[in-house]
Length: 181
Image (cartoon, rainbow, N blue to C red; front, side, top):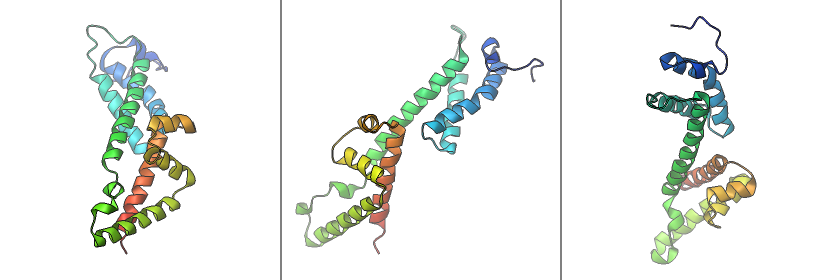
């Protein structure tokens, strides 16, 4: 059932129930998608995050205390989703880094040492194929031990941007280690 009155940007604030959610979705989905893509989400990720934001909004039980400013509430849900995504991605990238970076040659026999040396050469070659900014971010994280937030602050970029650069470096290293030709 479509409302027979004009729908403005904040008309969803004055309506209750499913119609409010439909109006909010229609009026705010585009803004949420732009917000997520501005914060380095791919279009698919932005769409998933927007859907999750609306699902969380719809699941709020506001019978005891109704949501006074649903647009603001939805945007806060979006900001929280981005923070959660950054935290989980950081944990995931730390868990999936190639194990060869943790090897010490003194613990290996001669054949394993040669393989480790070959792997290190591949890693070094992969690092030099990266853009200088990506390489610098990866070194700041792995060598200097800086956190994503510290790197983002130092370089004036978003945490999500730092996360993507580190992911690119890790991917390049993984590809270099897989290419044993």
